[in-house]
Amino acid sequence: MRKPQKTLPGITRRQVLAWSGAALALGTGKAQAVTLTGAPGWQPFADNPPETFTQQGWLFFTDAEAATLEAIVDRLIPEDELSPGGKACGCAVFIDRQLHGFYGNFERLYMQGPFHEGTPEQGDQSALTPRDRYRLGLAELDKYAQKQHHKRFHELSGDVQDKVLQGLEKGDIQFDGINSTLFFAQVLSNTTEGFFADPIYGGNRDMASWKMIGFPGARYDYRDFVERHNEDLHLTPVSITGSADWMKKG
Image (cartoon, rainbow, N blue to C red; front, side, top):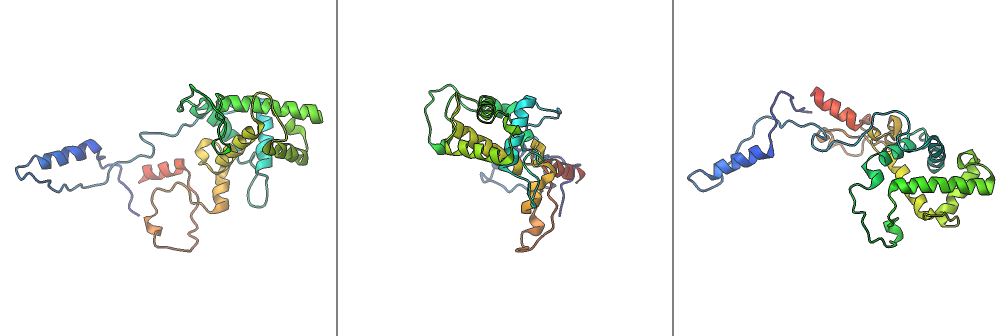
């Protein structure tokens, strides 16, 4: 596998356009072939780095909210012989980091209204941001658990937690200020994302889900394996950070 050399200068789009323009400017009036030598310098995410946070602890959730969420993700993805549970895999940490970042405030979406009820496939179309939804939803969940079982959600047995979550999913349990079914759907979706996302975002700890499904991860180049069909390549999963380190060593 050929690796790009760091010592070779990168080739920019401006350079390519300049060379092409120079060729067209020749007296022939025809475009001339331009030969590019060397390998373009490339660094992963040089123009659009992933949003990550190095701080320890919870960045958005309170300890009480985190305890409730960790109980939820552990019921959505329970530990078994195939992988650790959602809590051990860092799904709650993933959600915490996402809410702390631009996703939490929907900074990249138009949020000025008008707001209309959407279809189930569209999810929550209200003015609530993801931060609002989690803050309201987790509080309402603990309020319901206290009222019905005199305990906070994370203190309930696994079977009772499952019944409560099933009630949310079916719409049998209603919350104040937020659609409980859509709240459950969002937590389920974000938990799944955290389970399968690159570990750089806080979830998929030790690449547990990638190892489970045999996904080789964010490798730079697969050209040496394109023609190798229906065989186990025994490739160890690589994170985005590992892929970047591999490139730097090239």
